[in-house]
Image 1: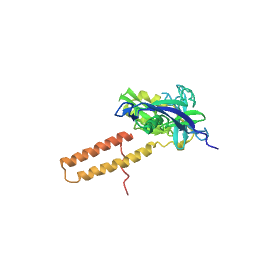
Image 2: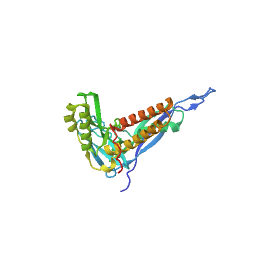
Image 3: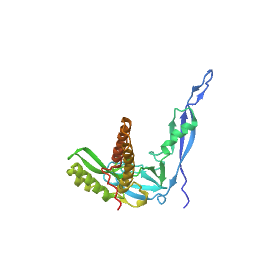
Image 4: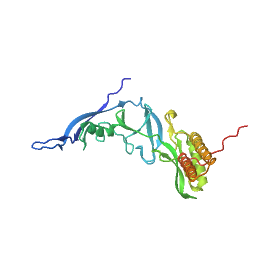
Length: 274
């Protein structure tokens, strides 16, 4: 299949180079304009297939309330539709016109071009519709309040990597059970029925989702934690000074931060060798 022609956006760009106006001795910023073409790649839906349908209760992916939104993949990158309430954006429409104007305060035309082009860097046209790059969504355990049903524990789909306790979209059952266990630990018993009703993403191509599983995340964190604890043990085995104790404290603070970031609450003892 031959590649589709690029979608061309013609932009009139104004910038402010330094010129010496008539009857002036010193250069001053003077507004000038020029035209530049930006080319956005176009592909067919066959080259950027849908790899998942993702619950989009908050409208981050442009789906109508309560409906799932499609995620596409092209060359290893995920894309979400540039849509609102389920209405797609057509390339060349009023929402994404082929003729633009951009005003830059820079004095160099090359920099003005870079500024104007930033808005198109993460765009792909698929079957004539506008799609934008998307971070990989993942299930995340979210807590509110101090526990004991004051706030709650919930399982949500996170699109920005904001939370430590994350699970790939391909690991729904593990995410639910981990969230239930965490709610029980916080005594958020009222949250458990809600967690078990968390909407499930429909995965069509698991290979494109790379968020580490809970087991992988814990194994990596445990290795790093044991390394830090080993360093602290070595310091404690020598002469103790204020400086050495401060070093141990810094190492333990790093361990605590790592456990928090990785969502690890305990590190199992390594297996003993027979």
